[in-house]
Image 1 (tube, rainbow, N blue to C red):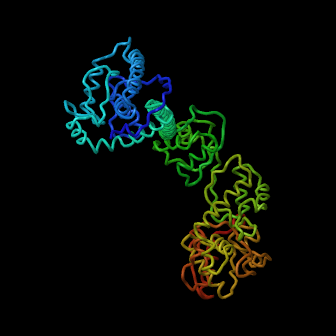
Image 2: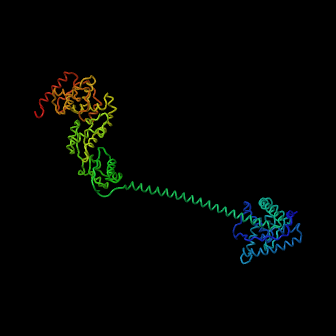
Image 3: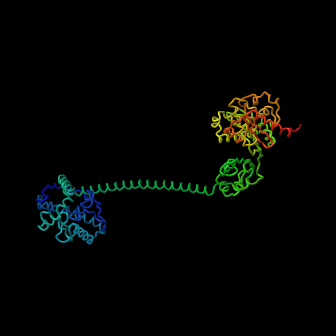
Length: 573
């Protein structure tokens, strides 16, 4: 029994208006291979199969003649249907010939080419069969072709169909099931096989719509992806470009640091401190707007062979000078604007004021007034508000524009620096004195010592006397209390009532009696070994000093000093 027996005859109802707009694949475009997804079979295999049954899908009612023409419908019905189909096929053929092939002419060569490609796809040559087991016709008008029902095929044809068999069944399983469902639905509605064409058209249109929407989504997705990529590339270009600009600016700044041009204008006093390096000098010049940048000055400083001969002090410079001009002015002796002064070791504070006043023109009273403002001078706490002993001796280049307070502060800063280097605070514990007492004892060594080599020995004498509780009995303390400078001290002088008189107070005077040097401070912290209790400078001219442990030895040494004093009477007498 053929498969047309499963379908009932549809009632005689007018056939629906044929759909227009079925597009045919352009010539030369590759047809999709069978075995694709359902959409691909509908647009590819399904349409190709309908084309094989008769190139005009609606004109021939693809399976109508082969399926309905041999069964329940009968010869009359068949003839009537055949007449209607031929009429429909002629109209459809005329329309498609006009649309597809131009000017109503049918391209016989294109049709034969398509038939040949179909034969090649399904085996090719005589005796080969298409996907439904039919032997395709080589020639003829598409509207005149009739599909051959499998039941009417020859044994050779059935054998060819069995050869194609299982593979073709798997490929057409989806389409055949859908075809049967649509044909049954069409018979129930009286539309015959045309419902299948309409449904396939709708499915094809939906498939095309879905594909168009899918392509739109893909284009939007690709557009977003391209936008993201472009944004990322733009961001990287911005980063690289910015880094390149900054790198070029940095490299250009290193090779060509900013600098002023010309000799500058105006005046400013700049101090070069003791031990300043080239970087420190450059920073000072930039701070006072003499040069524009540290690097520019260092570039010139490094190439100047005389740079190492630059002396500490104050220099009168100009504002906004080129680095080369600034370096040349620093090396010019005429630029030295400061007042160079050397303050010897062992000077009393009043003597320091007198020297400073003479050099700067600032009165002694102003220095004395500045010395009373101990908080603004930076004195250490163990100084107990006294500047005596903390105006460190040495060479100073005084700023001609500086007030008295700034000059004294500069000297106190020099002492604090020296004390840190000596570790004065910590080492004073080793000699069982506080830091202020160490400074006081160092001032005694500075006043009594004949030479620097005697400082440690004299320190040992003082420590030994302090240890046994004997007064120090130093004439220098009496003279400080009397504010005198002399080598002739009388017994009456030793009776002066003063906290500085070491004949009366012990173990040490209340404070320093002068401003000691670094050597005296070092000796105070590290006395020489010995058991001496007496020392006398028997020759003040040369500073020769002798040491003893007994009263007799002291008397001998004192007689030697008296003989020298007799030969060198005090001036004015």
